[in-house]
Length: 308
Image (cartoon, rainbow, N blue to C red; front, side, top):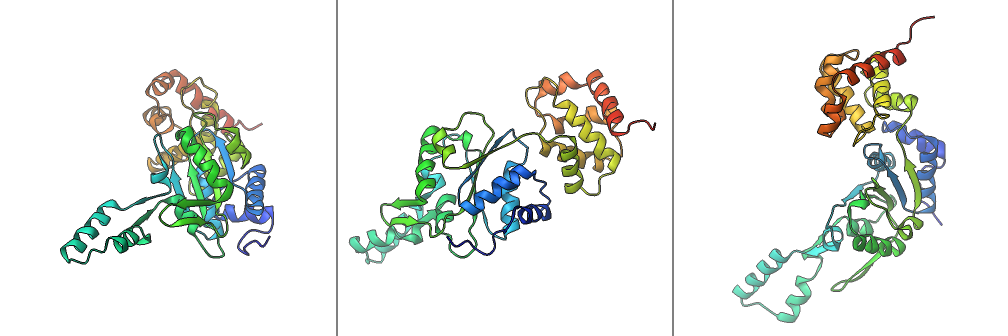
């Protein structure tokens, strides 16, 4: 099967393309993304919030020089909001104009009113209709927020990459889009959907990987601050909290500390800025004071060990 020339020809090349977009991917994730491109299979990414699932779809689209089409899932989302719907206000206005001009031909009006001019194309339909050498990246974000019925609809769509609109007929993708699905695992996704995808779990990075992410995304951060923040967050994730800090929170916190002209962790500043790392009031209150002091001391020791 012919593949567009814009696709990377090796795993190393894809890794380099992602790195140019400042996305630090481990080898196993790069391999999964590469295989999804080559095999034309959806890539299903699962993991905690803030670990880079959405970001890799953005980086992939930018690296390949193609469009990113994003469908943000939420509770209650239905086919009309994801695929298409008719522009009823515009249709009604058109009917009134035809009636006012005495030019209403019911048969012709019905044909015209349900044509593409009155069709509102949502992300899934836009992705199916894309033409050209470069396939768009379709990001179906946080599928775990949608219900079982919508998940079942996606199962059919991703099997054939086609949809039937009663008034227009069947619309089939000439070439399947590059599909990335993400889940924060707030509920289990059915195995039937996962089987149609290449699956990859993205966990929290270790110290070296998170430090690399921080310094890659924020190259102007002082090295000592980057090390201390990384050590602090790594230890913080071991605490018994309702919601752990993701990599996105780490980056936000580093940026905030730089904006406050900090070049090292300070206990007082950490207490004042915990809300950037932790998004739960009880978590913040449980960490303030002695626990923060202990973590700051630990971070300094790990990041700046005494000379032998």
